[in-house]
Length: 104
Image (cartoon, rainbow, N blue to C red; front, side, top):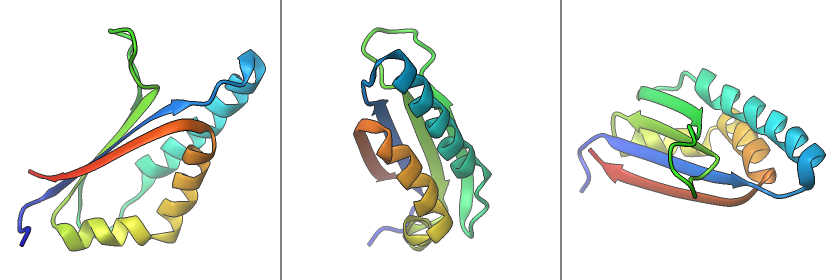
């Protein structure tokens, strides 16, 4: 049984649609990330979103991290309709999305 806080980490890479398409996708991604950052759901301890700082080659385009007081709080976030609307905006403009949840 998991009793500890849960950290959720999501990273993504924008799809390649050329410079104009990439600008449109980035704007959609920014809107989705802003929506995730604005969420205030029960059990949320910390929530961060951001774009890769470009300090190393091969990085992903963005990351989301959020900490949840327990598994139930994370599961509530996972099925929340507002969260899922923002998630869809993000996923729709990405070629790759990686996720992991772990105890902290």
